[in-house]
Amino acid sequence: MANFRQLNAGVVSGLVAFGLSAQPVLAHKTKTELPESILPETAPTVPATSKPAARSEPAAAPSAVPTQVPGRTPAAPSTSEPLPGTVQTIAEPVVQELFLSEPVMSWSLADAQDLLSTIELIGKEGLLPADYKPAALKAAIAAGEGDELDALASKTFGWLIEDLRDGRTPMEDRVQWFAVDPDQDDMPTAEIMAQALSEHDVPGVVDKLAPTNPDYAALKAEYNATPRANKATRALIQANMDRWRWLRRDLGDVYLMTNVPEFQLRLVVKNKIIRTYKTVVGKPGRTATPQLAETVSGVVFNPTWTVPQSIVKGEGLGAKVLNNPAWARNAGYKATKAADGTVYVVQQPGPTNSLGLMKIDMPNPHAIYLHDTPSKQYFDRDVRAFSHGCIRTERAVELGMTMAILGAQMPAAEAADISRSGKYTKVEMTRTFPVYLTYFTYARSIDGDLKAFGDIYDRDKPVLDSFTQPRELKTTQRKSDEEVIQLDNPL
Image 1 (cartoon, rainbow, N blue to C red):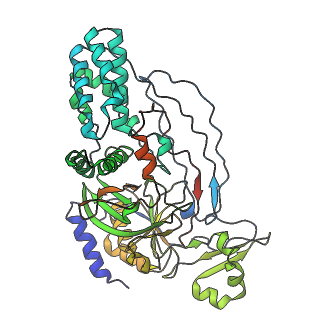
Image 2: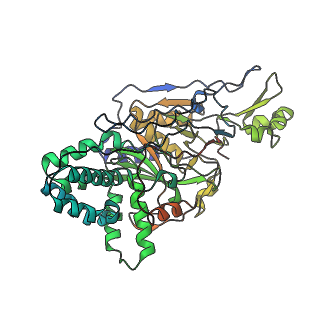
Image 3: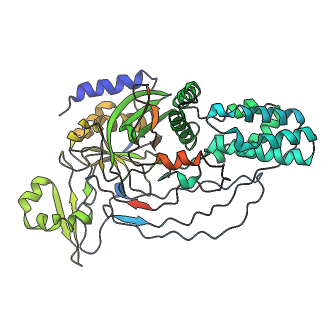
């Protein structure tokens, strides 16, 4: 067992060094009783910690933007809830791809010339000047102020803003990308254009749209320092610069982020990494880890695990638990047979639990979360893609304690006591913060060095190919329309 005194000291000192209090400020909520782990005869019970929560859809486009083209009516979502631990494909509501419209505003010749100069230099951001029709804009400027210049400059500026703010890559080429970027809600095109024209500072306003994370700045510097003859490296950097634009511009003061191809999780405070943890991610194929931007809602110490029917029935675990009570007790399994004959198996808290000793709740439709594992040997591998989608985390108890301190203002000693208790305990967050599951194949490592990472899910090619094609008009689609696969299986 870990030396908790040293662990407590390490966690607290790390937080204090970054100006974060380890003392209770807000009341925290804990739930220490064990949830219903033996399912009733008539129907399965879904543990509260395993329910996928609905996520709010992005806000509607600002009223300043012209009315969009009408389209199909989205299909109504299903209201049925799956049993945790089952393999299920969820049909998402139809996402209507309405084309975005740029507002039209009045442009002076000076502002239009600044826009033209900005476009000609936009290659430094990894974008393509030709996408924004500089020759046509130059001709419109030569023709003088008027409706033609207003329409063309507004459209061109709108395209440029969309790509800088939201990314150039078409949504269909962002494989398994479910991290909804709220930037177009927070910084609508109409407001950005109005600011640029009122301040007569197109270049300055455009410069402020880049992601604020220092890792993006490092990629940008590397891109501009890489010789044009090195086309493959420049293309890879360009693609990964665009991936940063798919995320929120400012990730926040405190957040968790895992780069799936790097097999690392980092806790970041004020743009500084204060803790890193090795991870095991999803196997390629249907169990690949999707890309998400979610919110930590709670930490579960000593969790239970509802075993999937693919294991209970498919691998005979249910019959084994029922027929061998002594073995089941030693392994921590309890089973219930429902009226229809279905066997449900729940693994109780303990060091052999498949979720280990800690689970971080981050409600999402994919049933993906961060958790501990008893299979520590996989952290010694270089390539760690073995899970069914969830993120297994090294030193998970330490991570859970840190989350309890940061998110529930819990004293470190109390968090350590709870983690050692052996009892199911959920610590509700009173201060929520984001967690990002990203996919960068060229990025700064946890050591701060820029390097390439293996494209374990073959997600680079669509992005790279999109940069060799003409820019596509943006739609209102905000995430991948691929199927949502719930596996909820840590094995």
